[in-house]
Image (cartoon, rainbow, N blue to C red):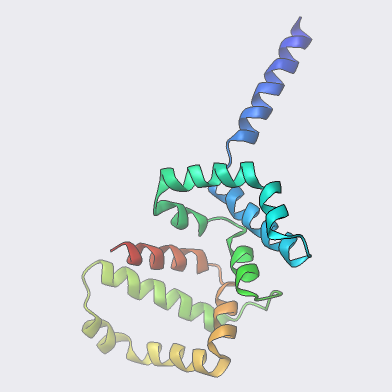
Length: 167
């Protein structure tokens, strides 16, 4: 009897955990979908394969609204989704200068949320902004963006940027 209860409990827990996809599971489904299409599977076949999971993700997205995209940025696999959907391939090394620009962007966005004006930021941080703009120009926007994804605080920057879009 105890064995049957253990098996029943295991089955229920397994089914519950399987049916409760999270936002990060949805990010992984997106990655797998793009990979299958890139490897030659038709879009129709791919949609059939992931139909139930995609429907569950749509339910989660509808429930969370704009918070869905914000929560995506905190997923460990979010960078992989961006890379595969934008065609950026491979990992580049962490560039400390680019990461300083990511941190600088976070700092200025947070200051603006607290009411600091663009004019005040321009006055105080012009040289740092100029350094980041030059680095972006020197590396090229695509390469700069790819290197940003390797920075520790990239997800935080994305979350702030998505929050700005809501306002």
